[in-house]
Image (cartoon, rainbow over all chains, first blue to last red):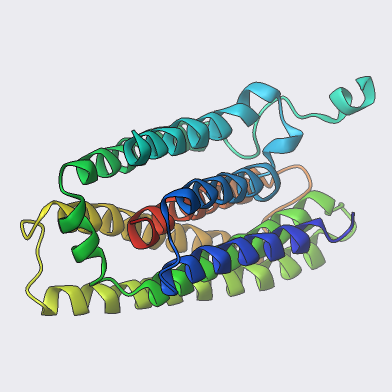
Length: 82
Length: 199
């Protein structure tokens, strides 16, 4: 995968356009909030793993931003749904 | 499996000190994000009405800009990692080019965000207008300062690449600055849907 950074950038842009369109076209609904949070997790994980380069380091350091994303996005979901 | 483990680095890229800063920043912003989400529960209608006053398009453009700048910085780091003693001058020059693009993105982000603040303050909105705008202004202004600092850091790294200051034995400073910049991107990736989109 020589062009991995380019692929990651394309995925990030596509997910950002998806989030923007949900808001701009006023399509955001209760169920789509979960999808939006999931796409935010994917974007954050891609930045952490590939742009920050944490996929190539010891698992404990790799997990810190991923755990942060999981906890913060789960609490946001809890605040929205519960 | 053992080969994969052997290829893994023990520590994250850059100086460990910058990672302490990154973890503290993530924790601080994380508390603000969760605070916003739970405060919203108390007055959903007011949060949704106030959110309509934000410009989602400028939020989207700024997200695109930060993601793209992060890509440019990652390209620079990639060049640094492939650098050898024979081609280190050329590598510094190439990385310098990517940093210029990333800095341009940083300046564009700051300009767009400044325009947004100008518009918001022009409408008489302040920190005490309501809870939504308190969170919006605190979070985005705090983030704005991080982008400003990140752009200065990128500028300093760029100055060093111009004199071929990074070598295969020493490019940790480059990686540290890059890691800080990616953190700024990571924070905005959560901030954008939370403040601008979710309602």
